[in-house]
Length: 441
Image (cartoon, rainbow, N blue to C red; front, side):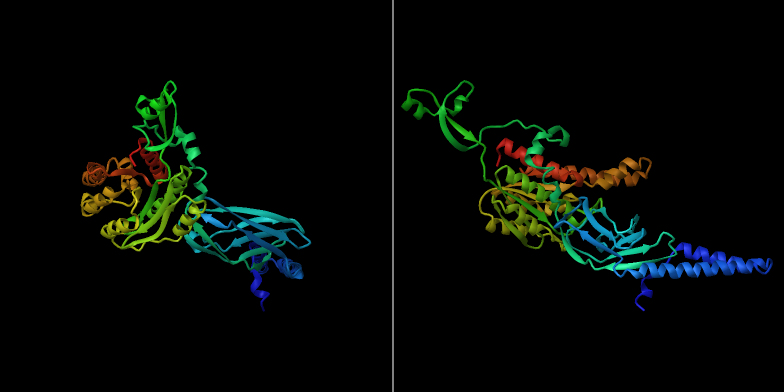
């Protein structure tokens, strides 16, 4: 009985039987068509039985294996390979159906092809996950048919597996510190004029032409009877934290991804740049309380720890409590450092409710508030030039209010980054490099 469950009829079978039925119908008017239809029916039955024997004679008709990476990268193209081998002694037509995780919402996945006798092939397709977390692949289903293709046999190959989708680690090389500086014009980084000096002393050395007179060490000069200067280097090992708001304001979708996913992807790449710049990178999330804290360190395993802490973070849809965030930072992060806060404000009212807490954080640390432009409203203005005046005025008000939020934060000495979601990584790294070049942390 289980063999019959593997049989699926194809179009040629129905075409052949339709021809037989038409032939019998014409037999009422042309008696010779009865004999022709009977011969066609006999041929169809014979061919069907012959195909059944061919497809079920070899018990293990085909074998397949899905080859996955250890983990998938969120919002990036991830290759999936399937090794398919034909054990039949004849050429087959196949339709491969992979049971893809339901997060992709792909319900018509099918790959068709032809495979020679006792040969194999490598099939590759790509998946772009839009959510982090655990993804579950199902079995592989291969529908096999002979060249005639009256019907096909389904061969189900157990291939269930789980794989984790992490924040976008494939972009780490693309946005490494070296590449970022090497492609300044390409990705939009501006060269910053260095203001003042770093305060980290390295050594005392002989004066040479071009050294700054302000760095002359007069005690060493008097002792050695020649000009000596202090040499400084950029201050290293500073604390840099990514603070990610996972409240309901970060659930807003843009381009198939939520703002929370954009922030998490950017935090991983940003932390990699921070570590390459010899600073200490850390991360934490917050909503009703501070969670997922990874202390700022500069160890070789730090990026892995950050990635593990971020891969399965989900929004809890609650109102973000900035008061608890302020208290948690005050007692858990005692050393002054840079805090890059990923959140979103849609109105001045929402900002003013949280402004006292942001000011409090900025007194103990250098705070950078990163929030998002509403690109859908901006696109609406460009695409609906003849829209209703009331709608355009309302949209322009929301866009203008975003700029007012920037000015309000800057008035209280709080650094800001207002960015499109797709430009988040570049603009955040630019801001970090600007802060480091100006030596204001």
